[in-house]
Image 1: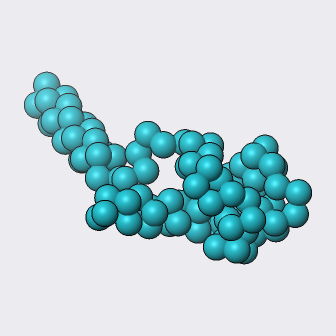
Image 2: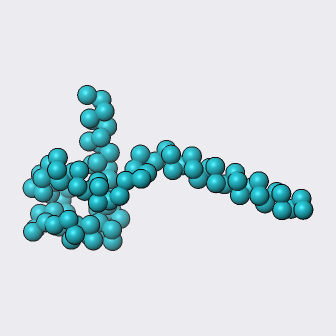
Image 3: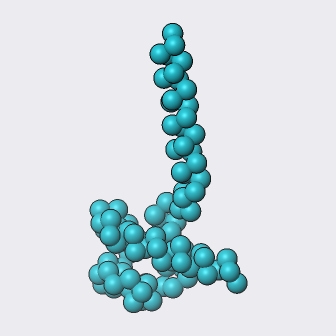
Length: 94
């Protein structure tokens, strides 16, 4: 019985820690599609390709091909997420 209570307490503590980590993530709840849509609306494909040098933004860009590439390529996704966060931070300081 005591082991069961201890396991329940540990599980509850782990869930609380995970919840805190999620709440601290500024991208929590945002899909890659939402992020990319906002960046394309703000910059357009040409400017986005200049800011992040990825072929899927420069050569016949489309949401579907870009999302497919970004989902499979962690370094490219990170660049997109970082640009998004920088722009959101700049907007929040105005």
